[in-house]
Image (cartoon, rainbow, N blue to C red; front, side, top):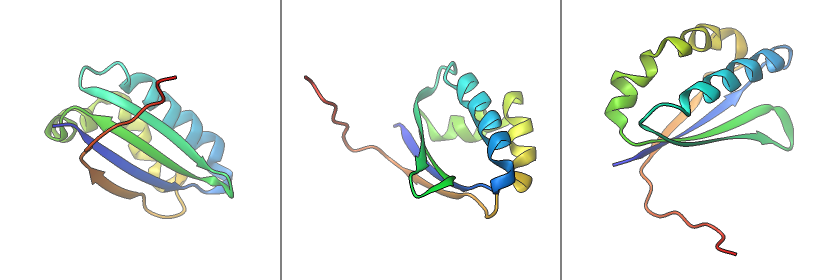
Length: 103
C-alpha cells in the first residue's frame, strides 16, 4: 500500500536559496525512482521561509530500506541542521481516495 509523507520545513532566511537548490535536486532525481508516485512542494503565502512537502511512495519499507539511503540524498541530509530553524515536522499518511478535476 502506498504511503504519503507530509513534511514541514521552517527554513532559516539566509539559507532559503540553498534549501531550494538542494530540495529541487532531490526532487528532480527521486521522481525517476521506480517506487516514486508523486511529490508536491508548497510554499506558505504568509512566510516565504516555510515549506510543506507532500510526497507519496508505493511502499513505506522501500523508503526506509532503500530510498533514504540513496547517494543523491547525502548532501541534503547533511545540510538539514544548517538549513532549518527548527526540526522538520514529519507525519505519515495512507491515501484513502484521490480526486481530480475531470473537465
